[in-house]
Length: 140
Image (cartoon, rainbow, N blue to C red; front, side, top):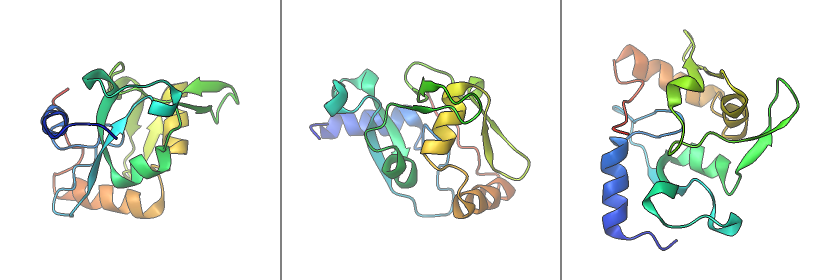
């Protein structure tokens, strides 16, 4: 990765120290964040500011270099959610149990690929919701 220290600081500030995919900010939990290439370098992405976002470790690890997936509702190929070009609230909803649902093809595919509803992650979100720390609000 060739992201500079300055870019990293700018990405953290723009994101408000929130994962731009699942909106987890850590609250009282220690959380490691990664600068993610929305479009991976191997797929022609760049280190430009408009191709970088902040991702929590689980979202980043599950996403990897993926840029598309199969929508579990329609079984059609779709791009994954792009936090630089799309609005989170138009693609996801937070359910009363702290699980996330995709409300578009991109949202549904992203929830699936990034494994946003793994039991441990939902439990963390639920706990942070009770503390008033979830969802974290990004600055973008």
